[in-house]
Length: 355
Image (cartoon, rainbow, N blue to C red; front, side, top):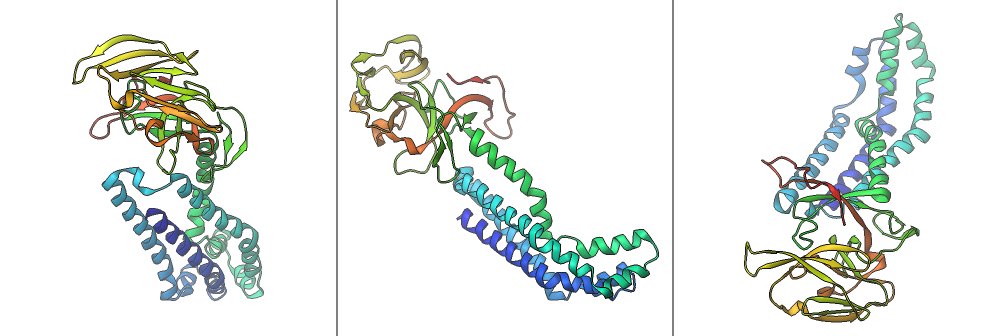
């Protein structure tokens, strides 16, 4: 719903800006011609009441966006606002269209309007250079939509480039990657490690690398648009077998070494060091055999088999199948903060590279 409301507000803003530039700019310039050199007189006679209400409509539209955003976040967090990449692209496109149209079309039109004989005659009669410049600045001043578009466009564009092609921040929402990643960890995801992809549609435009066994990867599961984060266990063509919670790949058993027992709950959790040859990582499993402790499959071409490090508390490829290459988002590389939310403060004690 938020994306639809945002799209409506963007459309209303652009349409009203076009009305203001096409109908309002000549009115404002003519007010200068009738002002006898007085800025106060120009402002007083410039715009009819209905025209001044257009900016109010823009303000109300964005207040609606803010209200929907607040309700969505209050109800279920940022995940309920929709695809953030799509939101960012829409904002950049709308701001970019306004900036480009203003530069290419309306800037020259303003010059022509201000060059009219009657306008120049009035400006030539203004004695003070400062008063003259104030009149010119007021006549050429951006309407509110263009003013904000020009301010935010560079920032939005930089954020879009960084987030889409370099690094994107994520927050860990569940315990499926314990003990490697904890709930409320904030991580950075490398967006180019597995190739540069276009935002929103995800099409790979520049191949760079491929996922390796043991990588921690962010992706979309099949038939789901939510972000998941798991560890790459099986590569294309691998034979995956899980027997009594011991993993074998292509007939070779992956060595597991017990480090300690977490007896804070029941069943007890065994904290293990698993060797995925050559990469080692921490994992945990319950001290009992569970239904998901036994599994067997062959990974098809162009797909990857994913499992959480919290082996018995993870929704992963054992339940919804392998992950197609097209669903890859990026490689999780760094924990940069941990924050459980207000009233607490962020913690940086867990900062480090994700192994």
